[in-house]
Structures are given as C-alpha cells and as structure tokens.
Length: 410
Ligand code: ASP
Ligand code: MG
View (cartoon, rainbow, N blue to C red):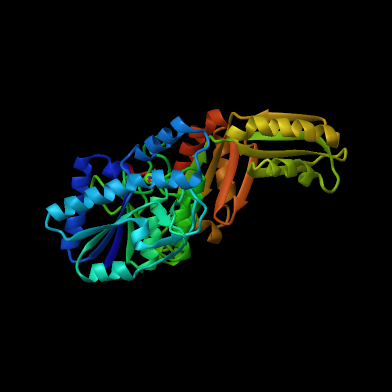
C-alpha cells in the first residue's frame, strides 16, 4: 500500500461537475488500496475575484486581512470535494491549513512553511479516510491565517508529501505533462516521460509555467517524486525526480524554453576602470529590479560596452536610471531594445557531452539568426536574439536536438 498526495488545480475543480469528476478519480485511487491525501486550489477565477473585491475597497489592503479573504477560496473546494467523496461512500474529511497545522512564518501573502504536524493526518489515514486539504494556506504561531503566494497550492502538496514521506506527489492539471517545448509553437513537441528537478527548475524559471517554481525547489530539496498529469484524460504524465533515476537513455537536451519577457539595455563607451559594473547595476538593484543576462566587452580605446537584460515591465525605469548613471560615468550613450527573445536549451546531458553549445550556434547560424547575447550554466545555454526570429529558432533547435515527435507516432 502506497501513500499518494494528489493536487488538483483551479481548472480541475472549476465547477461542481468537475469536482464530482475529481471525486471519481480520488475514489478509484482509494479503491485501488492506496492512502490518498488530496490538496485542492480554489475554483478557477475565484482567487482573482477575491483580489478584485479587495481592490474595490482599497489600493493597499492590509496583508493580514488579505490572507483572511484569499484563504476562503480553498475552503469552499475542500468542503465540496469532501461532500462529493462522502456521497460516493468514500470516508473523507476536510482540513484547513490551520486544522492540519501547516505552520508558516508571518509574512502575509507570501508566507513560508516552517513545519507541518502530521499526527492528526496519520490518525485519519489509519482510520481509512481520504484527507482533503486546502492548498495555499497556513497559520502562523499566533494563529493568524497566512497564504503562500499565488500558485501556492503546488507548494502545499509537495510540502505535505515531504512531511508524510509520500511515495509520490501527483499534480493533476489541464495539461498531460511537461513538454519538450511549448506545443503551440512546435506542433511536434513531445511529452517527456521523465525530467530531473534541476531541469524542471530551469524550464520553469524560463517560462514553462506548469508548476510553481517554489514547489519544484521544495520537491528537489526533500527528494519528493513529482508527477504532472492531466485531470481530464488518463496517461502516465511526466515524472520529475533525481538525476540518477532519469539518466538512462536520456537525450542530451531535455527541452527548449523561451520567453519574450525581457528587454536589453546597453551603456556604450563606459570607461574601462574598476567599479563600473557596480556603479551601473547598483542603482538598478537598489530600485529592486532583477537583472538576468550580463555581457561586458572591452574595446581597444579603454572604454567598454555594458549590456544586460531586465524584465520588459522594468525597461522604462531602467532606461531612466541608466541615463543618469551614464552621465555620472561619462559614458557615451544608452541604448535599449525590447524586441528581443531568449531561447534556452536545457539538459543534464550537457554535463557529459561536449559540443552542445556549438551545435546550438551552428543551428542558429544555418537559419541566419544573429545571436546578441549568450549565457551558460552547467545544464543550460541561453541566447538572446531578435524577437521576430524566436519561434523559428525554437523550431530549428527542437529538430536539431532530435526532440521532434517521430512522424509514425503522431
Ligand atoms: N488559489 C491560489 C491562486 O490562485 C493558489 C493556487 O491556485 O495554487 O493563486
Ligand atoms: Mg494554480
């Protein structure tokens, strides 16, 4: 007998009919003889609706009260799902975050989990019940309701799986797994059977939005096997686990991630002296703006061009900041370009294979795509290119690295 944590997101519990469907799935998992803990999100759109209600009253709602408000969404779904299970003759009990005692710090609207009491849950499981736990919410030491940040139900599910030492944490969602790239861009994208925590983290932070990033970090840290699967069709989904378990027969590259979220800024003709990077980026970070890729090159005339990327939403502010900095530094000019895209190839196989980056560059060259910036990590190579070539680049790389779904299996 195994213990599984199931998590159903907002779309999967978006209506009474869908909640009934989830109840069928949970019941058949239970009937197969396994212990089941279910974590649910609020019904789709509900958390946004609550946020809008608060905004109708004030621009700056008190964070403590915001958590009292936002946590109600999940409370509705745990009660409805538990009723649906009981109607099917399946013993079940609902738990709010407080009732489990998912203890968090007091950082309202973005709390972090400190400890989970498993005793009550264990007793209920022993008594043969399915547990239905509200995602996204916890309680601080003083008994205040807290929430874990948007999308936080994934983190609740992984944290419960870690605390209960579950055999697997299954995230049921509206896609049937993690894909080699976005199927809307590459119609021959493939569902991956397996991917490592590290790769999933890279894919997620590069814009593949299947799972909340924090939940993947958490799963990796506590080695909780995570499986992403569809709540609407049967299938094996994608297993996210440690490298040792996925290494066999894996291709060198697991996936291609891309995004259009960034903009590029260049300060031209900066004196090439110590402290320049810090004088350029210091004010940017002081404004709480995150910098992603950075490239600095040295010119022959003792000046340098300094280029970096930020989120597009921050572009105007950074340009303003840089104009002042450039003046102080005696730099020649500030240039910006927001029509860029970033493409990354991701794979743990890179550690043991040479020539991966050059294959990427060859592929882009063959398509006549100019590379503007490059950055690498142990398991990733990213390039910045003109936005208009982004999809072409993704498709070319997807087939160059042999990720396309074979024609006969389509
Ligand atoms: N209901 C919360 C949200 O919409 C948490 C979640 O769905 O994971 O962000
Ligand atoms: Mg969600």
